[in-house]
Image 1: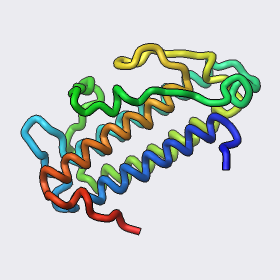
Image 2: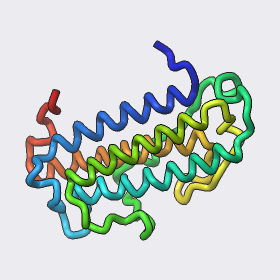
Image 3: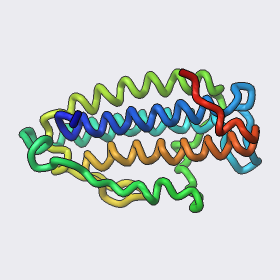
Image 4: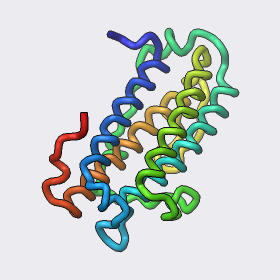
Length: 187
């Protein structure tokens, strides 16, 4: 079934990315989720904390863009689809240093991080839903890594960012508990 609007399609993508993240987290034994695979690498708990920080910032950005976006049917008519190239975000061969403001503090365990991430997702989805009927393709804001993005692209980039960290968690599973990364996610 096709999504009713571009907002619906983006939310569907975010939901699919979140399901993959959940499976990756479950692929790391719970007792290893606070352990770093190397001194210069984040633990699963730190990644989840970073994602919480990013998602809070993203909700603020989407809210600001929606405020500036013109009202109208641009969402469903002018922008029937969006193509956002996630390849740079997916490329784990290139290390990306997170800005200091988005660095995890290490004060959250994985369970707390996951719960906080679920809470930030509710706020983010409410913010995105509130933008329905606004033309987010007509407003832009610079991204520190990806250049100038439209409102729709900001939402898509959030999914790509989460996808990058899903791959990172899968790498952690392989590093800390070989074989754990291929374990089936819970039902």
